[in-house]
Length: 221
Image (cartoon, rainbow, N blue to C red; front, top):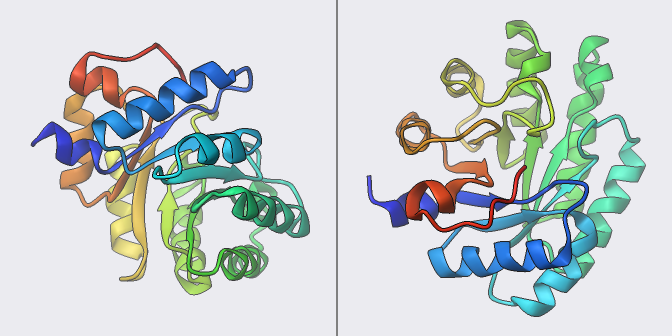
């Protein structure tokens, strides 16, 4: 699989809580140089990154990484990021609601966030390492019903990342308009190729440039 094709599906990511502007800037330079789908960066850097790299697709995170913010707080976060130049939003579901079995509430929250995002892209992080198979299946249905654009495996801050088992489960249960983003623990070219071949439209990783081109500054998730 061609490196440029792989890179075109990568959300080049830097979400460490101690990330500096110099690190974010270097990430953006790499994303432009190698043709990443987007950079995924903390909300506090969205405006600055968009001003420095107006041609770059800026993705940011909402309710990250734990997801237990209120719906109103998440919507406000998304609105602010939208105003500052983000084009894609990766929101975290409320895992407490998942464990309570309140999938109607989860569906409603995702729908509110999608309405807030409008034509821009909303990805829903479900943190698969915390979930049972039945919960994953129910979340596929919630994401589909709410009209989100993507279902995403992981924050990168949990106990596990993307697995092929979860990608295949997603494919079985999501609607035809929902795409898949594999994220967390993607460390080799073989991982990247396998997830793309399995149907993932996006990969979330901080390691893509180093893996594909041997040129990176060592930023982590």
